[in-house]
Length: 338
Image (cartoon, rainbow, N blue to C red; front, side):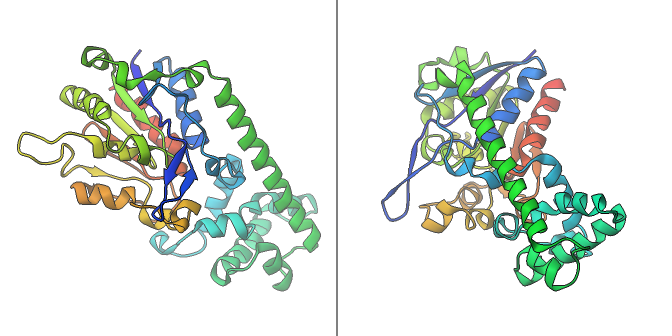
């Protein structure tokens, strides 16, 4: 059994580039899934915030489109693979997954098969329509009707499946929010500032979930620097997800004056992905991607935005985005097992 420092931002607001304050916190899915995974694996998990204040779930991270059921996300991936021969040329944006109804493909295929359409044919119909919707920036239901790819379903039928998906996603987001609120350790975390170096040395790893909160209180924090230095000296795993790698910016310098992680391969929420978020469009004062590169990171992002991508270099484990949540947690579990 390992002892994991579960380092969560307690920030509730982030200052935008125009000086206004915007609500922030941690992303619910990124905090919940790894936490439950680590406990299920038998590890001891201590929830820590920089100041001991209870962390807050980012309202933006509770939007339904960040909580589509996994079976719908997996099916969507099987559809997007048909868009282009080269996966590197498939650019999926948040707009595609949230506003065009493409994520409802699995449910539309199910409705078609219930009407007697062969499952393979149903998948082909939806994939052809989804590819056109992606290229033309049009809603999936509109394309299926206009291009006679509906298999006998009415536009109302198609929209009903999209609405059912969104209802399920909202219910899942609410369930995750409530589950996190039920954890006593999230309601009363340990203050990182209260821990001495000897207590920090008792941890076998650190994991930091994302949300824009880490940009506020983990990126320039002397206590985070102490934790990183202790773990780095022992070559203990340092894992961070999405915006969580902002904590690496607190790392101290080496004896040669270079950043502690200079030359390490790593990833995080990319500038491309950030430009598609609400805070990114409103104007953030800095981006984690660019800041890590400027610090000396060898940046390694995935083949496209919003796909799962994890990078492991020595003791450092980083995940790119919310889609990388499970893979990042599993990479830390694997490192602890080794």
